[in-house]
Image (cartoon, rainbow, N blue to C red; front, top):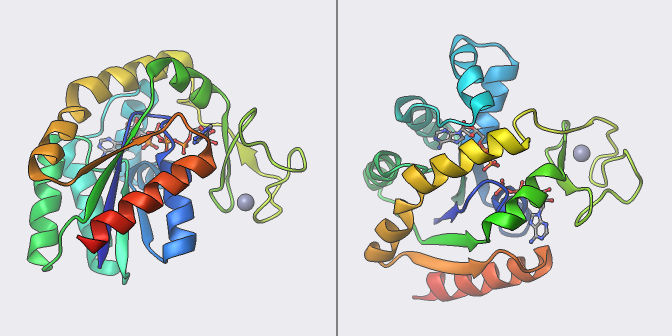
Length: 219
Ligand code: ADP
Ligand code: ADP
Ligand code: ZN
């Protein structure tokens, strides 16, 4: 089993790298953001409760996201998981440790994608996603080859997220610094932290992650 956490602020490139790791290493991506958007869009009672919180850019309660992850860990058969956007608080990190321990598993590497805040505004404001297959694009750095058509699946349903605006981003960044950034110290102290330069090109970030994983999985 290989379990990896991708850590970084909104727009750091977690989803982009997680999808590649799924393709190349056969891991399963667990994105709490995707799970919450799915619940919101299908209008479940929980989805209705979290919609406003997400629109504001606040974090959803630990109880809800830990519950989502617990369910997935039980139901998904995988040779390992990539946690994308989870954990985001110390309570979530502790809960993940216990869930993995109980299953006789552990975190192999926590990869921090380090980027500066100025770059995030550009990342977030240029982001769009295929609604059918989830591929992530960017107006400038990673546009579709044919405008309006997904490279991966041919869908024409490309969408921007309602919360990808400057105001929500400011709030998401504040939440990141207050509640999520302490996890960097937490995982450093556990000896699990690896830092990657998230400002490099998508390909170079991918290479750096591969190097980290070779190192972490060998040791
Ligand atoms: P980004 O790609 O910008 O990092 P995500 O798609 O991971 O954002 O998350 C979108 C929103 O979903 C967050 O702003 C937050 O409201 C909620 N969310 C996602 N993951 C978590 C989590 N682990 N804990 C609390 N809230 C979360
Ligand atoms: P996160 O999941 O951390 O919020 P995403 O993977 O959704 O981040 O990436 C945010 C935006 O930045 C997307 O539009 C994506 O295409 C783009 N992007 C991701 N990684 C890079 C990179 N290394 N260089 C330039 N643009 C990138
Ligand atoms: Zn697609």
